[in-house]
Image (cartoon, rainbow, N blue to C red; front, side):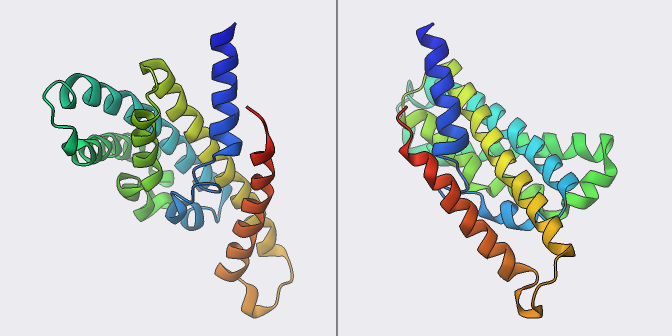
Length: 195
């Protein structure tokens, strides 16, 4: 029962309290760039969930069974980026074959998952927090869920704002930045939760 409570608190923390986009300000490029349409935001979110979960799995294994035993922890960032890049290539090939419309809609933002600092951030956080193997995988999954949640919320709001009457100077990026700031303030309210 204690393990379930720990997993639940980890989920609440990763999704709401310490959200990588709104609390840690990581992964802002796809957050702003892909959040214009709900379908592309959902596709990007699913890709990020997969990459974060798999990256958490493989980077934990690499750190534990390769870098630490050979005392080459200083290569952590390089090893993690190579692992993430390989996973993104796999995701890109699968999406290109299975959903060409989504692949075209995501455009340049799909390969940018490779350099998405949120993915690297969750991998490094798993090591720094000394999570177990299962905890690292779950933290990566929950962080991906949090990323997808805010991406979908932003996409929904931006789709509504496209139909709203706004001053010309506020259309596009200015209103997106204001909405992003308001969302960050709203999620900041979760920081008061005692977990």
